[in-house]
Image 1: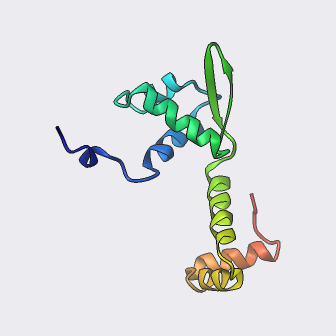
Image 2: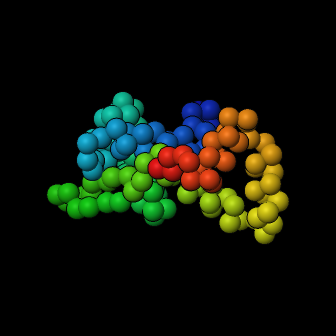
Length: 125
């Protein structure tokens, strides 16, 4: 029996690949099309399971398509990153400490951008 862990992807990599395929699409995709975009090396059940997990997390929506579902992202990549940042911030009791540490570790350019956004001078989309 082979070492199954040697073939495993890092946590979240498959979800990221599936999301990238959905973001590049012109509309909702069924699991089979996502599988084709990803190169077809994954089993359709693996792709379907990943899409179902993303649906349960609220990261993708789904609509009936024939006997199955077609999936679409609920937000763009920036929106997803922002939602993840909010979720991480919500996990900590001391929000001030977390935000302070985050800001203190920003690059000069990111700090300038954040300040401009907070002052209403930047593009907040």
